[in-house]
Image (cartoon, rainbow, N blue to C red):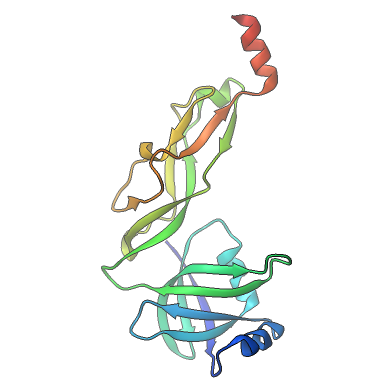
Length: 190
C-alpha cells in the first residue's frame, strides 16, 4: 500500500475558537487516536491534496514535531457549503492489529456485455475491508470477464486474500446497462 508523509504541529489550545483561528491560517485541526496517547495537532491544508482528493488508499506517516506515527485516515469532515476541509481524524496503526478501511475497486478483464454494446456502470467505487496493516490491499480486484448484458456482479463474487470484506455481500459492485438504442434492436430481433 502507498504511504504518504504528513508533517504536523502540536496544538497547545483546544476548542472552537482556536480551531477557527487555525483554519483562517490555512491549517486543519487533526486528532490521532488508537495509540497510547491521543495527539491533537494541526497540518497545513495543502498537504491533504494527495491524501484525500485521490481515489487511492494510503497509509500516512505522521511526523508531529519529530515524533513519528503510522496511521490511516479514519474520517475527514468538510464544510457543507464550500467543501472546505474542517477536521481530520487519524487512527494509529499497530503491528498485528486489524483495522477497517475503504479500499478502491479495480476492474480486470473484458466484459462480453460491453463488447456487445452495453455500458459498465460502477455502483461501488470503494469497499470496506478489515485487515492487518501488512495485508491491506492497494485495491480490490473485480473480474468482469463473465458479465453479459443486463447482469451485475456482487460483493460476494470478489476473491479475497488475507483480508475480509465488510461491505454487504449482496450489494452490486457493477452492472452492464443496456442502452436504449440496443434495447430497441434486441426487442425487434426477438
